Image (cartoon, rainbow, N blue to C red; front, top):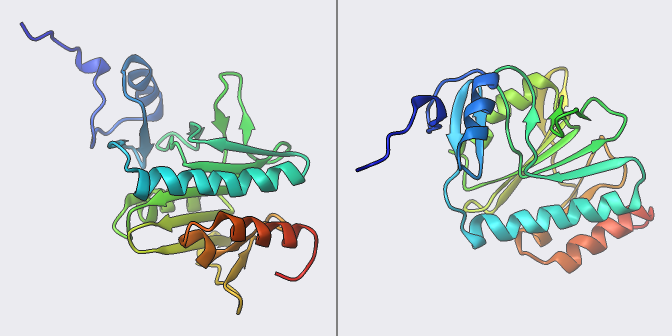
Length: 211
């Protein structure tokens, strides 16, 4: 016999739930990663190393190196973030100030909007650049980076007057955060998985040298 499952413990793509019910079902399930975005459940698929796993590790290495040089910062990998009643994402990486808007609550989750979020997406059709982007914008995530691995593009958005605008690379192909001094990215080096060049650019920016 096939064991029966209570509908109150099932979590599937497309479910429409509020955050409390999403958390209850998520906790009762065996699902590794699920997100609530604009009231709709998104359950993660298996991840490819080349399109997700490796880029994810490289973004975290870059952010972790920056955190190691600057006091008072927190970096997280796929943490649950309680944004609002309709949104509870698990971003690929977050960077936030210990005394900023985002705080670790009594349950060990992040409540509030981290200053910086990074996501690894396949392409522009991903919800990372649509419903999730809208949720981050509305909740005040100040900077949002999306690495589109199939397209070989990196989008870096900054929040101005409540709306996201693209932060463009300079003449050397470098993008620097407006929220975190010295957090600079050699875009082409990252796209080429050249972490030596990525970290060299970051170290130069932290030291105030030419990049």
